[in-house]
Length: 384
Ligand code: NDP
Ligand code: MG
View (cartoon, rainbow, N blue to C red):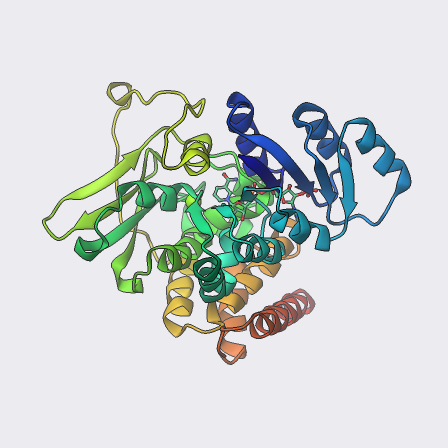
């Protein structure tokens, strides 16, 4: 299988290449992409020898091109090159591992071209779920969830007519038991120090606010075609049970593993087969306990904001996602307190009227309007 790894220099990219390299006879790396990390991408090209390398945030540069050529890869520049490799006839499967809205166009291109799409980039489904699903249906593309919770649900989901609900687990992140009055002063490094997973900085902040789980509820709505009231969230601090499916007979089926993204990635890569992922075997007896609790909505207002946007429908989830990206970026840059992330998102949602999200233009307009509003709100807050 020829594989394109979009976002190869990130955390998902590294885990994907690790699994692929352990099964070289089965997966051939066709293309690797990064935004601006040229040196890291070149290193990856030397090890995995893809046909194409893409630097989506860099303009043409002959010296760089030469270096990649010496490593055996043709280097392409600019955003359009992402769509080109994702839809290339020589590529069978696309790992959508770019972070944020920047991953939408290439995910759509892969879906439109009928590829096997390994979906890590949840923001694409949050922004434009109806569109991505329609594109995949029309082309026959297979969308395989990589997000650990959705991958777990996918593994446990058999007869959809008898499914009552799905239960997504959430670790609660680094601030699950921090005194509430201390939340306003937490730093980006504290927010990114996730207790169980090592991930990119944006998703780490999303985990700390629990917006990550909110985005995942929306992602689940599209992947499994379930109404919001049939998608539940439960806090499970050990991150061993990755999600559960409840059936009409009272049976609840769960998927368990050590927290290691190579498990869902290997499952999505090889589906319907199973292959070794490199993850450590689970030793249940060595674990003291597995615990579960309800989310605290005062501590995690972002989760409720996401449910509200999902219920509102149309472009509300697009607005939620864009405002979140702007707020998280400002928090990471030290321009916004942690507790204001939810406020910026709530005010942005209130100030932008909902519209239909059935076409890409409407989605992109809502995304741009939300980014503008959220940016203005953050500036006003700084001035105040
Ligand atoms: P990282 O920040 O570690 O990596 C992001 C990757 O995307 C890098 O290769 C980066 O390139 C590239 N990139 C960044 N900005 C752009 C842009 N504007 N255009 C094109 N490429 C860009 O992120 P993660 O690997 O943590 O997350 C990737 C996606 O997977 C996210 O959507 C996240 O929600 C999802 N996910 C991640 C999990 C994890 O364990 N990490 C778990 C479940 C889902 P460069 O290095 O040049 O900046
Ligand atoms: Mg997840």
